[in-house]
Length: 231
Image (cartoon, rainbow, N blue to C red; front, side):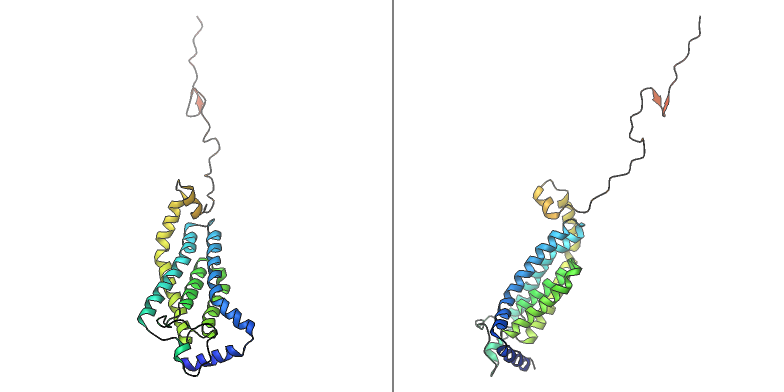
């Protein structure tokens, strides 16, 4: 079934205009760069927020890297040949077929995309409308250009997303504590990386509480001097 769907998608790809094929080829790599830009923007916008927000923003790219590592480990165990060599009668891949030994399952690009989309959404909920379509398009483009089966990219998306969620949830607490410590550090670089954090209101002082008492007062009253009788 996956082979039939692969043939249908690659046949459709060859019927599309040349410019669309070029966009799909570029998007498989450009999408990764755009995710990198979003990581930086997410960190920068989290700097004025609390330590937990900074932790989530910092863990987003690290969780994505973890998703890639998990995918690569699984890829080294499942030696699935690339469809651009294994599927008989399929249209030629739009991009060069990866060399033998660069296995197909799961798709590393899709794992990175799935991990990045979810990790960014955990740190920046309003961006989910952008990151999820980006990940889906990146995964589809890997089948479109002919280097992956549909089940490769589906597994990559799910695997990357789950790995990122697990990584971020486990490390949010310790990373948030580290960010709080960095904010009070004497190192200017550490404090800048962690961000200024939310502004803390000045403590309210009761009127007159800090005023110095006049000499000779005890309990706020002036001590009277003893009066001498006239001789």
